[in-house]
Image (cartoon, rainbow, N blue to C red; front, side, top):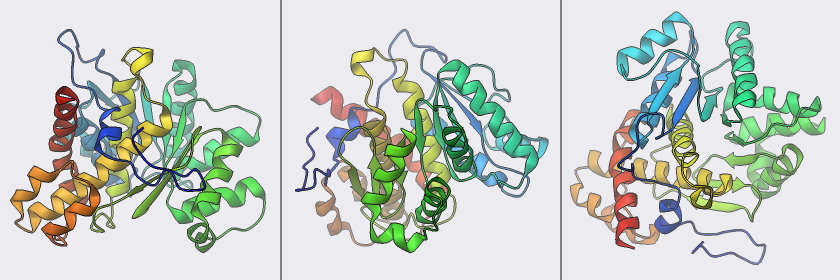
Length: 321
């Protein structure tokens, strides 16, 4: 990696070149299955938007196929927005589970549990968000090893997870005060890659903890975490179809998704502010982007709409290298 580490071994920078290593253009002999399949068990009756946002983000990131499993209301919402989605949970290469799933919702938690079992059978990578985090912890504490897992909590969710794992009360403020210690604790305990979401996102895995800073703060709005999970699921499924030597480590792939998501949010905020020239600076170092100003408010859907342009820019940068 071209990134730099501080005295603690923590990666301080993750740039476009690093992110590009986890993004792949379609090959001439690719088809929808060879391009990768991501499955989603997300959303619920009360939060159908999580399912819509995640599946749309995966489609925008370059996946071959998206599958979705949910109740009638959630499935209708997903298919209305994205008729490309297939409403079943047959085979898949990556599973996004938990976004918009209330742990108290018996039906959806049961479906999430079945999906996790299916992912284990298929040896698929699991991207677990909000409503599925507790299930992952429960499995590990019960002696069941969970392979190929990326967890994506925010500070409050990570605090709740540590409380469950350590049997001692931890608060979001504790996580915010010592984020690197918090992510390393959970990664070491569960054996999963851990993504602590925020303006500064910490990604812990097998290597030194990676830190990805967002160019702006407009992503602090509802639904953007669902977009991140969807993009991450797509990147993982696509990468799983490449030669083993080309496949990025889960930690680096998760960091690439965070970088892509942060830049998409920045681009959307600039376009909403009328700064169309910003599209020429997508891969510039973060400290050079301040020249474009603070940007303007965005919705999670705006970030999704910007994803294809970012993916295309990263692919083009690989071709020029």
